Length: 158
Image (cartoon, rainbow, N blue to C red; front, side, top):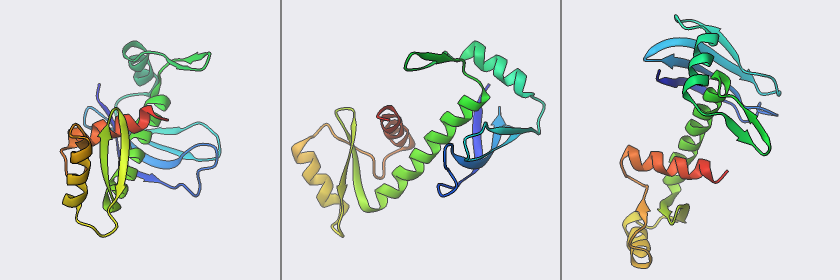
């Protein structure tokens, strides 16, 4: 079962205790749910559109995803957790794309580094970074796999 979010609308101004968003949840390429949260600390709302029920998806996730731990608490993986993970990944991807407009972004020693461009050519900054660390992975202009790797590094640092 491949679960993905599309048509994500996120509003940081309305996000108080939880993320204020709307999104379409697709399962195996088919629209399954409309998801939303008002950002005031409540649970996510899922409006069934496709053939799957929330209970069926939760049972599949329970069987196929490991439980989560937060401190000394543990909880099962369900649709709300899955959507939260996908939303966090998309928000980090968007933040990284915005950052790359004004900075050179690299992955070095398992961390994300940013070097402001300040109207300098990006090739000049890349040359300087490569001179000090030839193993640095340049995220700007790289393939989608490198961008996904950078998002994973950002998520692991939270």
